[in-house]
Image 1: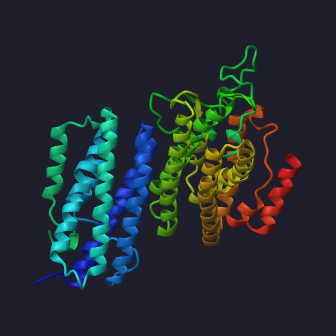
Image 2: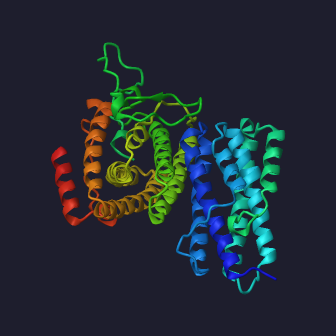
Image 3: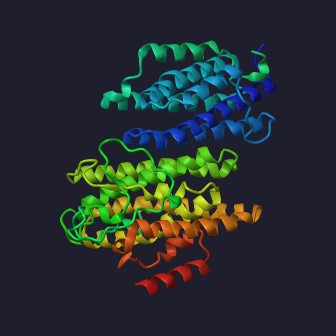
Length: 179
Length: 263
């Protein structure tokens, strides 16, 4: 059986919460990252994730939740976000955000798209497909920047792999789903 | 862009021999500065920058570099507003997020033109006084009043004058940059005007916070700029731009009369 309206609303509101956190993370890093080119990348991406949070917040209301309603994710994911946000090194920040968090979210969007009814939940499908497109472009931009400035690509591979695995192990992000 | 961006000084960024030794900035008026990479030489006072006189061959290119950095300051200040005020209304947070994007684009626009004209990032000293003045205050209405309603609103007047000057000079590239920039800046001043009114109606204590912050910011700005950075630097008020940006006709008339007196 597919997702109920309640399931959809909770998933969308949880993704909204995550995107507000991503916006705040990039905003916090903007003054404290020394590299000019990184600041400018973050400036554009703050707007991207804010727009995603906004679209999800409007959709949550359509799914019978309050306007711009957010639901905190499960505790392990909340801890992961806090851990990434506390990173001080620019190379690690970039790797954590663009190699672990965004690709992990993309997998979750695809999982949701596979489970929901594409007609009954078409507005959510449209939002997630747009997010997949824009967030993959954000990842590509970060890779281009890191190839142009190699010092930004020096996060330890083992550290990044461990973070990717930590993200993967979280499973369902929706706290009310009991996972 | 605001008045600090205009050149009016000695044409060198080393203090001239026998120059007055200035007292350090009052630390109580400034927050810590933002990070800059090793290419940048960050100064505290206008007089320590490369202030080429009007007509100097390096005047415009230095201005592009200075402006590139000031747009980063605006980006950083808006970003700080997003993370320092997580409980602010979502609508104003969206405006701030958009401002981050706009200021990042402006910085890149100035950089592109600067490099096209032979500049290298870090070639001239920069100031981060905007960020240091704005983020000293822990009140969103006060920050909007300083950053958007003062620095950026003053920028509307300066950019409009810049559009006229570059058009007269035949500098179409810089004129086009200014026209794109001012359209964005009007939006930033407009949302600040709207939200300052809403925040002040919701809690009148915000008006007091704005008044105190404006007084301190004015002192801080005077310390950074000194007489050298402000004397003889004034533009006519951009009445049309200010009205578009949400100032009332009475506010615009008052600003115009003040600026006419200064000129």
